[in-house]
Image (cartoon, rainbow, N blue to C red; front, side):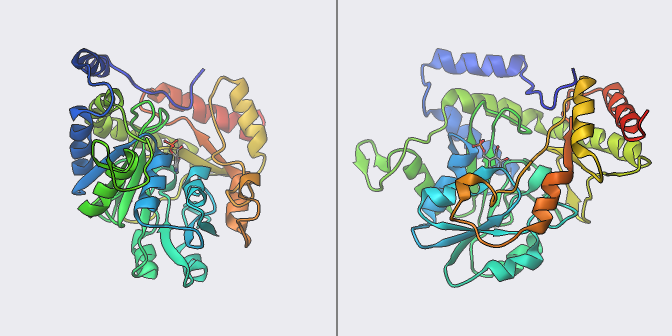
Length: 359
Ligand SMILES: Cc1ncc(COP(=O)(O)O)c(C=O)c1O
């Protein structure tokens, strides 16, 4: 079986976890501060607040921004649902924007139509590891804060700038299938220190000092064990990203001659990190997915439906999203993780070729 994703845990991570276990500081400790410094530096951003998940990163960023009932927050119609649910946690209304049919990212040409006097924030998602059209999005947004959902884009580059460094803040996930993991975890990075301080208070019961609560906060802290794993994973990220890029390039070459398959379309200035390698299958996507599975080749549809069409969003979404609907019927993600060998990729390309050509 060639799996879709494989978290890579080495001796370094094990030693780091042992270091924390021996220190006795299992909850918030110096490991978390170090991870915040190291990861925000990696993003070329001044400050970071580590939290319990990518979902909490989005939730706390919106809360720290003062999003409240009646406000509107714009996001993409095609992503994991957690790009939108935190908007609802705060009683605000999500507004969805259709996607660019080639990159599957928020279509900046549709964005201006979604903005109105109630819009308080915009959340583009850097889907599959390629940054959204940030220059155009920032331009249309004007004074409205742009919060980058970087859950799939650790280290992704857009016109020389790192994911998370272009908008008001970047929000990351360290879930096990992501390009780097802490088990569960997330982080908000921003150059606005007071905003990051507010997130640090909110994640920890609204405390300034112990038992001095200035905000109604939560417990959404990152553990020291998670932070210690994250520090080791961060060291390995550049090599792992290179491996993902090499795998993607092998796919690009191998799939180029197969009719009915469109490899990922990368816009100029983008250096994606291939969280997913996602092909467009013109006809018979589900049959291809099934046949690959039968040959022991992992594959997955991210995502089989749009966010606005989800029953959980009933009553909160208006509008139509034809490009997102279409994408949900045609996209298929193939294994691209760093543990794949060139032989694995050849095997997958050969299988796709045989299945598509009906042999
Ligand atoms: C685009 C996107 N946003 C948000 C999240 C939420 O992250 P987490 O699973 O760490 O809560 C994910 C992760 O699955 C994601 O892919």
